[in-house]
Image (cartoon, rainbow, N blue to C red; front, side):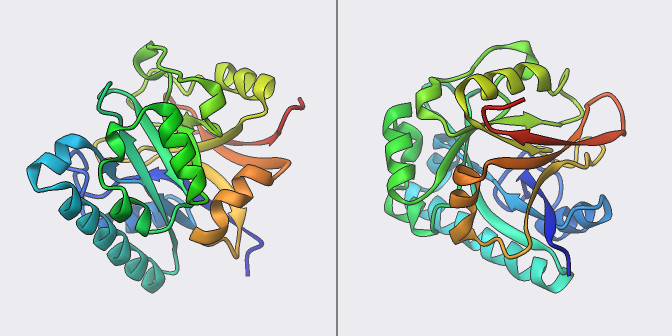
Length: 240
């Protein structure tokens, strides 16, 4: 049995994320074929999606998609963890990843997209979760939010982006002791990047946030956007 699992921390499925081209069973097969041991399913959660039905209905459907993904993952021998990629209403191009919250988080708070950064941070922490900003420099635009209301920053390996901005993100994390995560932001519109975070083999939804927030070092698997080559990097919080 493996001591650690390579988990892509940023993945989507067409059952919720309309921009994803394939359903969850194909998402999982492609993740497995690319060498991942699992994913965090971070489907889009936004005001636009809620308006298509209702906030309560979106929250219900969102969780049902995860339960389907988890069942299929178990059949394939993959770990599927629960996450959220929140689109903030005040800036639709601002995306926040939420890890380690229970399923009741969005059913209790279906309009989280309306919250200010400080309010969201406090709410996520009240539910035992962690807040990570997704792709803060995507398209070479600086959307990095207030660092005091973030637990971490994502190194995003989406092949269509202009770069991972790894060195820039690493310096910010070192200077502030924020955590680093890595994910492919996979939508099946590009090649399937191999990237993520190595997590303990016994990781669960309930232990994910605590692990991320308390680990002294974390091993990342990075796939630069302009090549199929990958590499591992061990990040020691606050140390080079």
